[in-house]
Image (cartoon, rainbow, N blue to C red):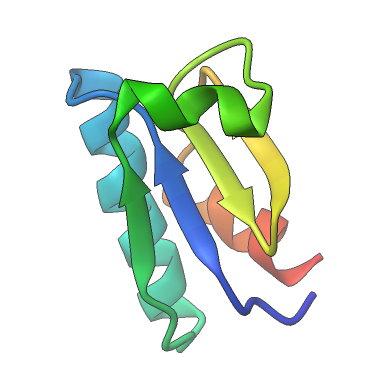
Length: 80
């Protein structure tokens, strides 16, 4: 997958912060120069039809909801 856009959606929480850190590490390990856009305004969550937070959206496709996977798992998601 060619990663063009990455969005991290959620509220400031432990799980959100873990996902954010692991996502940045995964992008760095893969040498992907993609900015992470953070969507933290609850009014915008409905746009993505999410059931759980935090969520990861890549190229306008929801890849994860309600989990904060390890860096290695995120790397696999980003290259598939």
